[in-house]
Length: 149
Image (cartoon, rainbow, N blue to C red; front, side, top):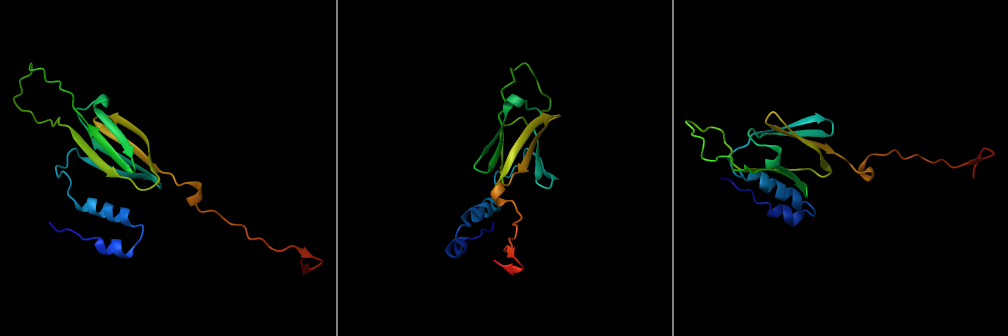
């Protein structure tokens, strides 16, 4: 596999180390299993939804956590096989998992719900007032008897 060397970026740019780290982590394949499958969709101008297929998991077996712009969805299956069941075929993957999603700055989780085997996590970009565009009024000097003061 090809790797990318970001050291020239570190030598010539200041403050972009987080971007380089994100690119490096995206280049890595991760666990490679692709399980559980998920969707990421936009639901509005500044709204997003992550849907994770978690069939067979209950709400008490799932954890959704955000820490330092990293959304982590974890599933820990409790042992419900008491030895009484005999499987002819066991195709449901009831294994533990952990999915991570890197969030942009100012993206916050607004809600999470589990319905029909899909865990839906709603996200919204909330810019602080200081970063929102604002209109600046242009002042004109006061006129006294037709002349500038």
